[in-house]
Structure formats: structure tokens, C-alpha cells
Image (tube, one colour):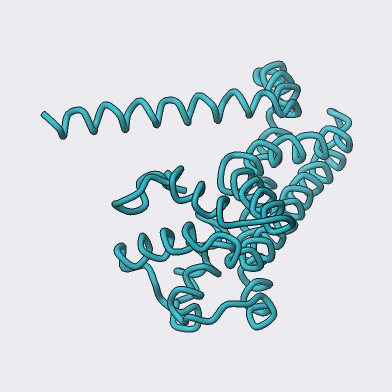
Length: 236
């Protein structure tokens, strides 16, 4: 997801979040902290860091490194594990974010302004299936729910249960297929003498979440450096 610090003109994101937190008291403040922590995990790289590790661990637990039967079974397990993890986190994300909108009115308004300016506010019922799939897979089911809320003006999770379930199926199904294909390619590589050693090293590193923390940290830093360089060129 694009950095929230660029979502709309006016106050910085940090100021918006401080205002939302300052308005909260007691248990409501705890709810705001929990909501923002979850959004930071889910909308950041948290689930992306855990996904490959979970899939790789499931794959390695089944594959014996020799028979094709165990290899294809391991690839299927990796796909199911990846898709299942994605379905769980996407479902939780939709429920948590939709339930917590009233806790962060400033952030909610900021998101609404951004999506409206971008012309991205369309009711879910009027979206094509391809649009639903792109939003659910690329940005998350909670974002699809937010778009529908801003387009219809209606909040609530219960009325969107079918929408959430369908969107989770689209997103998690795609992740499961992608992971399964990647696991199948890895399985084949471990059985080809020319690539076996490299595939085994990749699998060993892939199981470690710290590998993906480092990768995504580099991606984030490179992105920030590129954005900073672009802004400096625009100011000249």
C-alpha cells in the first residue's frame, strides 16, 4: 500500500494519529493502540514476512527430498498453508478495521479524502469481479471494505459478511495458487542435480522470518530513498 503519509494534503499523518489518540480515554485508548498496531502489522510487511516462512516450513515438513509423491504433496501443503494463513489474516483485518473505524475518525477521514480524490470510491455491488479481485489481492480485503463504506456511507461488519467471505476467497485463493506454484518449482529444483544445492539453501533461508524481514526492510529503504530523490528533483 502507498505510504499513508502522502494520502492527503494538510496535517501530517502523525498529527492525525495524535489527535485520534488524544481524543480517546480509558479502554477506548487501548482500543486505538490495538487497532493502530494491527493496521501497522497488516498494512505494513507483517503478514508478508510470515507468509513465505509458513509456506516453506509446511513444505519442508512433508517433502522427503527424493520421491515425487512427497514433493507434490509438500507443494500442495505449502499452497494450502499459505492460502489458509492469508485467509485468516485477511478476515481478521476486515473485522478489526471495520469495527474500529469509530475509534480513529481522523484517520478514517484521511483515507476517505484520499480515495475520493483518486476516484476510487465505488460501491462493492457496482464493481466488476476483476476490480474486486485486484483490490482484495493487491491491497487487502479491509481496503475493499473501506472503499464500500466511503461509497455507500454505511458502516458495519454484519451486512458485509458475504462481501468479506467472497473477497477473502479471491485473495487467499490467489495467494494459495501462487505459493503452490512457487513450491512446485522449488520441489523440482531440489530434484535436479544442477539446481539441488541452490534450492536447498533457498529453502533453508526461506523458513527463517528474519530473511524476509531483511528483504522487506531493504525494499522499504530503497523505496524511501527513491521517493526522496524524486521529490528533490521536483523541487528544483
